[in-house]
Image (cartoon, rainbow, N blue to C red; front, side, top):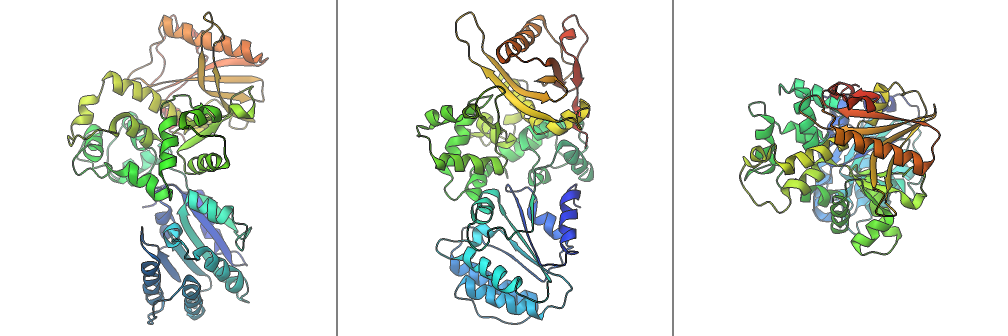
Length: 474
């Protein structure tokens, strides 16, 4: 059963109603459900479909393509000698088909594009010299691939595919409400706090959620999947980055460096940490990581573009660096033993902040400003002397109605208890921010927490409280 994805399905269905032939790209990170979306939407009915082979040479790719051609028409073909010849055979197969709209689905393009195979050139020729040249405007070409490959080979293509796309669909991970629906359909019987805790580890990646088993508690599931000897996510981190990026080591260096800084790093800080000089290569890698959903770039309010912060936001990557990296245990009870430890509590606070950053639209909706023009920022201040205190603010919502929401994100098992010390810190952050930026807007303290704010003498500094129920809205 397909959960959510209504907008994406509508785009795909609409391809069948267009008069002209259509070329649609569906892209996103590994395990996000690209293939499942396309197959479910078209009810598994394709004039032709093919999936590339992971880490396989050109000879195997072409042999597999031949097999897919034979399945599509029931005739026998020899193995093509090149991708140009393979697409020529595909043209023959499609010419035999009688559907009003012939849907062609090519999955895992990056795997087909082996070194020196000229796959992209052949795809360009197929689209430009055959599909668009046909009197019958009956081809719907849907292709899937990783964000990095699609961006490099199609979006940034300056050859025959330049500006040829008619639709593009970026498939994002599930939000909390979609995870809740998935958990319900799967019979997982999880509370909203448990769903949030699972999101803090797994993010909204559907495949990861499909591994949860109803007979285990959440802690048991995480222990079994991430730390058990046969855990299906035990090696996922390396597989994830290796599958997305042809040379993954530089990307891993970037995310590891970003994983050390809670609020993120500027470009210059990142260059220093990596020991690299400013280059277009680093820019491209940061773009790739952002398109894949691992990194988010934030403007720093009131500062120049050079002060843009790059922040690691992928929950599973953060969890890996906190607990899995260098952990050679085969004990599936490891996670259960870590619960409520100082290490766990520190991670939970950071992980909950990342969950909130994934749900800024829901926060805006709960604040009643979904229709108000606004910008999302972070902000840092480095003290200039011993009397000053440094400030880090992860989420600021700068609104056109002359209000700035300074969001404090706190994870707790019960109503959040505002202490005198915490009130002083928040007041200091607000005052420093207002003084340094010289903003004339009202700065409202907004608390995003699990269950709410306990009413004490120190709670008055908060002007609006949002809870998990707000984050779970559509």
